[in-house]
Figure 1 (cartoon, rainbow, N blue to C red):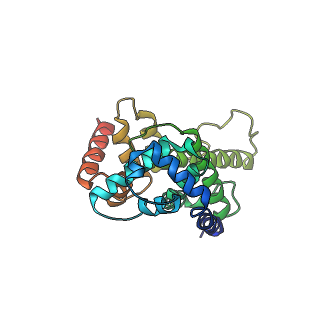
Figure 2 (figure 1 turned 90 degrees about the vertical axis):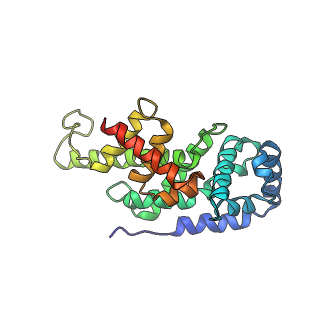
Figure 3 (figure 1 turned 120 degrees about the vertical axis):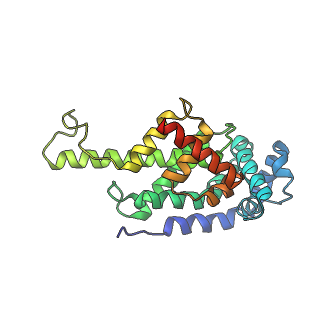
Length: 246
């Protein structure tokens, strides 16, 4: 079984405990609330309270509000350097799910699951910062999908190079590039959804299908992340699946 070191997660959590209630955290919350009414309406005092509010599993209305707040955080993160850090902390449970779906980096270049997760967090940070100002309807799912795709490609490149070298092929040559490493049905599905999103497949439908079938999130988990009802998400998932099979 793949050895999983939880130290990076513990370090993130410990760092957040000390940072989230600090004076800069309160300043960041004030600036974010001034830019985003959804944040102001929560009535929290700092980024720690904001992230806590996003993780409360309440009625559908609360989940929908949490999704809107996360979307607002991504959109207005430039108001203070600590806001992207808050986004990353709020995303932590989803990142753990992605790590599990990718077997904590098994078969890749990482020494253990902890090293893989550290790389995954760094990748998530890059995506969060790069998307500053973006207004994404399914912000959480879009972020998790982007992170998973980048890490999956990184692991696949490592496997392909290692396999080609192990049978005496020059890793830089084109020989054996196609089909040298088999892909799973799950990887094929992920690649298909990625390629069709926005090109015959509604991006929102694609995000739901990706979250359910590739990331392995249940409809209940997707509902908590997006704030939409399970019935609504089931409809989008079915519609996306029908488009793929058409």
